[in-house]
Image (cartoon, rainbow, N blue to C red):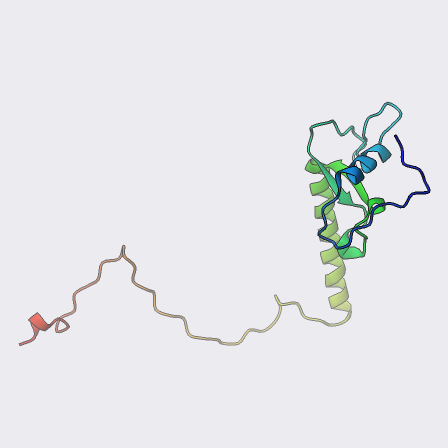
Length: 142
């Protein structure tokens, strides 16, 4: 049963709030085709009952999306959600590096590092036997 257009969708109070079961049901109903099958908007295949599905933000929260019913959609957890998340992360990284290059900001990889501390001597471990030093133990003293 479809929800009426007059009612407002669910909006979370904070970004970590769990999605209520009723909202998940509304999202699945919204994505149903004429045959009553839930369709994944990414691959176009049917999301079968019992298969792993993710409730994904169409506009990611980090990019300014809202944690609300209107911004959520059901997609296959694997591979659709994994592929979408990877693409978004790569695009975000590329945009940040382009921004940094345009504004002359050095990344932490290209920063000059100081000399720092000298390298410490290797530590002795329980598997490495101690060697006896002459003159170190009292019984060797004359």
